[in-house]
Length: 145
Image (cartoon, rainbow, N blue to C red):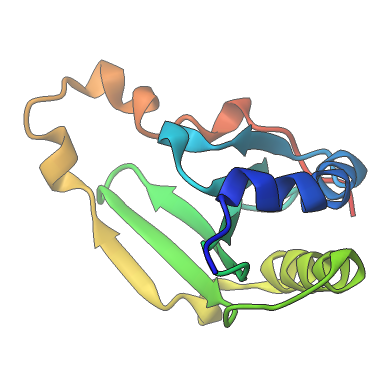
């Protein structure tokens, strides 16, 4: 059985919107016409976070998230990633899962870093005054607990 992911999101849009509003998150729906909603925010103490909720044609949702911070001098991005298994859920279970991921992201520390990305390739032809275009997390809202 194939389900249009946008139709699937219709079932969950109220839960997703309330989650974003409750925690003061920036919400991006269907980036690049993809079957996902993204939530972006800054943590009060350090770094930025992204939570992605992706819909699949068979009716499953998956949640992927990370907390990270960038080092401009070293041109590196440090990430602590969370990947939940695909979920067959209802709205109440989605809300619980999102809150669990949100709380886990906000408790991450540098000890939890599990991916370091070299960003120097992105800056080979980029003048330093344009680095902010790559490190533009300052415009995202600070989350509310």
